[in-house]
Length: 150
Image (cartoon, rainbow, N blue to C red; front, side):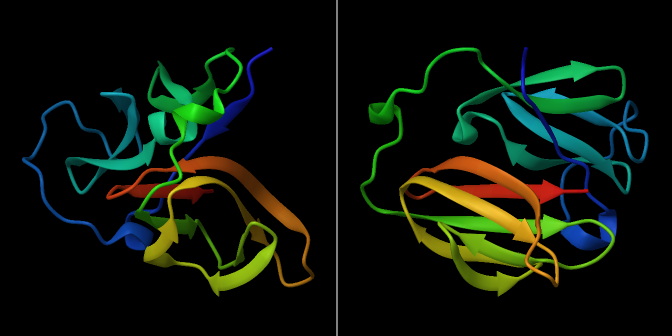
């Protein structure tokens, strides 16, 4: 069975602008584009989750897009540990603590957090320390990885 990792984002949480207005863009809908989950925000498609950076594939069903397990075993060589990348982390509706590799780092939203390239575990935790969501991600050098949970 495939493990599903879906990302839905509130427009106010992102704050990203740009892109041309799209006739096929209905607010709140998602799609896959070049193995990236995109959401329709203010009439424009915005990249929100890079599935490839997580070692997953983007799959679309109706108006929703999700990063899903590729079903293959992960090759540790597929996630080089050289250099630094950046990380954006957000949660819809409220805030959460962001833990990276078991260490409390920040409170959401997190933008452009500099992090060593390689495999990392990123968790969202509530006020009591309970894990809300967990990602096993591959941070690529000179690349921004976006993680959002609703």
